[in-house]
Image (cartoon, rainbow, N blue to C red; front, side):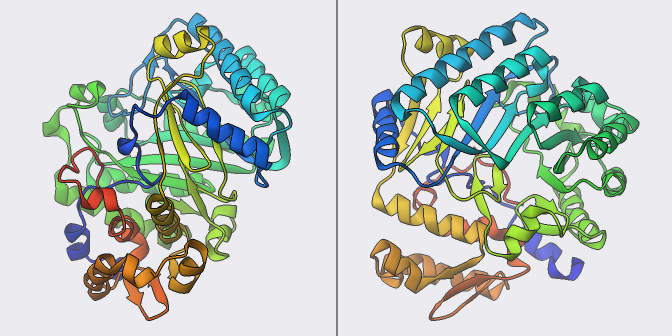
Length: 459
């Protein structure tokens, strides 16, 4: 695999860009979008009777301690009582949504993210899941996942999560090296992680994901290689390897990280190159962007069969569907709209106290947005674009509509990232590692933007 990814290409595409969990991206949302716009979209789904199930995301913002690298919307507190009120508020939000959607909505995908969802007590998690089951029909065989901080669970607690109906777990490990863990204020023993993952397999969870981050303070190429070796022994079904983006002006916890302790750019690229080649050697398939999976995992199977999808939680095997987003700062998708909730607990609760949905901004997509969204997601998930199919589905002349973009693809062709023909274009094996760069060509908003500093590096 190393010969596929040259250092020259890694350096050339060491630029910032969106992650395309949505298009247009969340930075394009406007405050003019209101509760009324979301209610209209909910009514349309209710009246039409959507054929596809819903996906539901629940944001749990609480953490017991701060991880210095974190860029998530979170509330660091040791006051466990705050969680009980928050779970009650989630129930009130669901009640308001059901008034517009009607009863009987089907869920095939549920994800609890944070923060640390396992900050909630067993009773609070049980109350939350019971409320969701009363409110929606959760289909057998769906994907029901929760993010887990290894420091907040033990073996009995994993068994309790399984009993509640979760069938997928994601462990936030980030790095196994004690010096790196100290530098980012997230200390956990290697043995504890191995013990927990082993127990998930005994219990019967369908899939286990592990997150790693490269580019952290005190990380070296050698120490990161050791973390990769350990994770290969752990053998999770899925693996996410994220690049750390140091943006202390935007994310206050990152100000506690000493910039002098961060690895140099060349060393960070070396970590990425090492991860790509090592994980390929030990049997992981590259899914796209920062995601890897074992060949028999449903994510790998979906990619081979052209059934891969992408939403705000990343790559998914579930069909493209509307997303209900619950909780502080959560972003949802309904029809041709995106919406985001209030970013503080106080604003969120206040809106619910007034009997209204806590929407603070969003976007109604126009026809060009819808076409480009479909195109970018096709690139990110399937890697092949058929011009005629887009012309038939969206009533456009593809070559005329994207004349400037197609001209720009020639440079990517020269670099071996894709092949272009009269019928369409296909992402190469090498191009999958730079798929964000290919998608960025078709991002109209990004083309008009001179400030990309708010985005992370694309590799």
